[in-house]
Image (tube, rainbow, N blue to C red):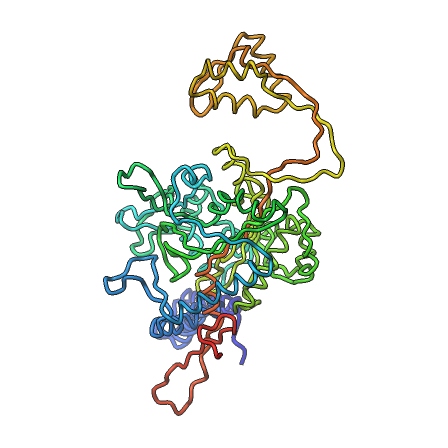
Length: 569
């Protein structure tokens, strides 16, 4: 027979309650048969409603997680590192089958991207000096928001993850209204993008407490995720374990471009370890403090970023969550990559191409298509320099897991490193027809005076003056001449410029080439997360033999030929 719906059960409770109240109004005795029966019906209706209102688990991978964890531990696919010493959160060791599976995923990635896309590959140190990461912004901005238990201050939590877990649990309750479901969905997708103040307000709005104790939480505050390390015996040179492999590619752009005969577009890849001092590493391999990244920096010309091979993937259908859909609290849509680019949902063809190629790689590795989606970053979570960014998210037992980020990073990284080092990190394009333009130069006599007047700081002042565009140079010359001088602050020092320092001359030059700073499309893969998805998606248990008295769970990992750790030769 059909089970009554939650709405029907709520009505039954209401009707039974009114019946009991009516009988009590009549001053019925407690042992009155009709009152006893009415109370029994009310109790039963409440019990059925409570049962029907329990959170419903719709994630298929949650049900098999315990079985899979047991297999991975017994067969030594992976287990906590330093286990015989009690282990340290956020560090894992891969055993023989796990190491082989991970190596095969990396090998597939190399074949799929480096070989098929004709990329260059480098290997850079895992320790980086302070200046590099200061310039890239990691020293100042590579932070997560943390909260602490107010009474047990040794218990730390990542604020956005607490919010996400609470909202995921609320979404499983079948009795929530449609308005509540929409709001929970919107807040869940935006949790990563909330400011410190917004995140604190949401934790209070949903009454979120410390998970283990139920105590109040502190206000969120920033925590830098990098591991600092001194370099050299004096300890005076500050370094960090690298938080990503990408910066090594940007630092070596100039040399890779030379190896590619300075042709555009081209890509550079790197696979290796990265390190992040996670606040509360949980979820097995999902959030580690040492992990393997595989990143591509694909350099291209600014502009519409057309891509020669885009037509080959344009008809590929993907489950997508554009930012506009998220802001409305709606579910993902199925769309071809070609339509997403044509409609301006994905910024350009090059970005769209790598979104599609990422999907192809994940499917080849063993990810199930129905549990793969591409989510666009909301405007509030997009980096200030990014034009567009999409995450490949895979549904696993812990929910939708961000596994790959595919971003159009514009020219930010090359620009800031070039400005800091005074090394030109640019490319040239031959013009279809020569063009004549007026250019500005610092007068020779003015340049000679800089060395005399500014001594060791002359190079800093010269660099500033020579970098001025034509209009700015003319304006500065006129301003200094009229005022008799001007103070400028360069690299933290103040310099007094005299009229004789600011004498410029202009020339008309014919240019056959155009210099520009390349833009970059960056697909960034978390290999350990791909590993997690492949293992969870490949697992199933054989039907149990009814005559088997031991009731053994016979688990199977149906891995793809590309990923499988053991192969027949």
